[in-house]
Length: 552
Image (cartoon, rainbow, N blue to C red; front, side, top):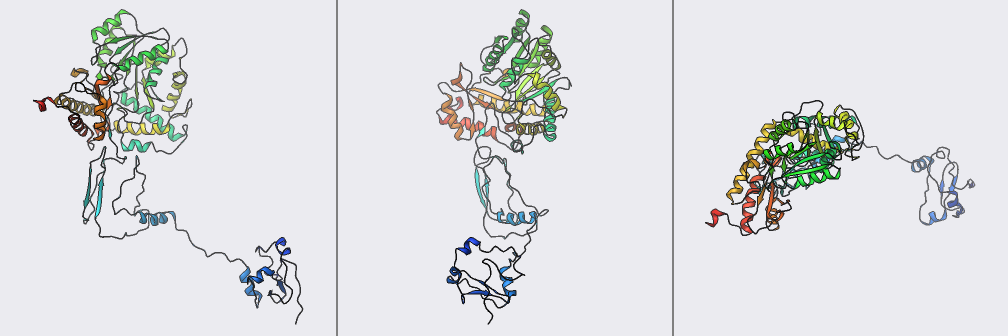
């Protein structure tokens, strides 16, 4: 019998196996582990043996082989069996079949749907298992949806359910802004993050500025739209900081709370504001305006188109004609925060110099954008200033070149805009301009008349008692004697509609405000207005009010 030959620790005496990178016990491990003397368990081959550590022998980890071929097969690492990963489209199909929606399910409680529906055109074909079960069709039960839950027997073809909105169930928001938003506008807010100077975003911003020209009805290439991140109030700052200078006289026509605030803004920038006031619910008459303009020279006159605190509508066209006749150098500025998009406004034809508005009202875009349109004359007055603007962020010195470059589809930067809001505004303006503006204004007028007629039939009065003073995008309603907003507003909320309380500081506890603009008016698939009128009538009855016809 051939004598045993001891090999170095941690080696295998087989040239075919030795080069393989199979990890063997480290020298520290083997040095600390006694090797059993012959005839201890070993791995035996044709060319020699390798001793086995004692602790492995005791635990029966012993390998005795007759030939090196088998040894090589055991010690050489075998690669795992190959398998082929299904292409992405096939994997999506495999997943989608587990999400088959033959059975009704409650829609995702998100502002918009991001579900992906598999289609035979891009996925492998499969046939879902058909089960003989009742099909449940759910309709949303609150807010902008019809309240019902129907269980229907399965038919040859599943019932078609028309969804009025993909938004989560919620009470219809019928205040004078923010208003209800269209699904497509909210979906635009989910746009992926992008650079504010990238070509795609610059193109979107430029198109949005151009669409504003159509909304305001101006074709003068020298007029200038501005879109800044901020609320409608920022529009006041833009006007006060850029179009007047300290010591300038400004005539503010007062129809409610917002005239007071605009006047305060002018005083903050050093201008001298004179308010021409009218009784609550009324507006300054033209003879009074003419007398004021003749009394002294005013650098500017401001008119609140619709005062949100009172629902009073000012007559812009006739006042503009009067100003051009009596004081042609006076700039005409319109606060159109609650009117642009629901009231007729012709920037060029009426000779307006500046109109300011905001995104969240009749334009129908989430809050956060201050929108201003300025005439060529207004831009000239700005450039002729003797002192720099009193604001840094609102200064047109900083923003004018930015807006001009964006509209020319050139990247530019002063301060970061709000890309997602710009996308939403782009979508909203595209919807508005898809139909003639006169058609949009007409449906707002008709809806307003319907609401005001219903309010009168309930025995209620409006702050704006004269028809010519009544706005078409909102209605301010006096409550019955002795009733306050906290008594009725929660009841309306329970019925799925939200009104606003009073805002005018002198009578805030005596009235509520009903906003009716945007998709709640223009979308024929929504019943917001009808439900609101029904809720108001029923809600008043529940808190003890009896309409004149009911009490007689």
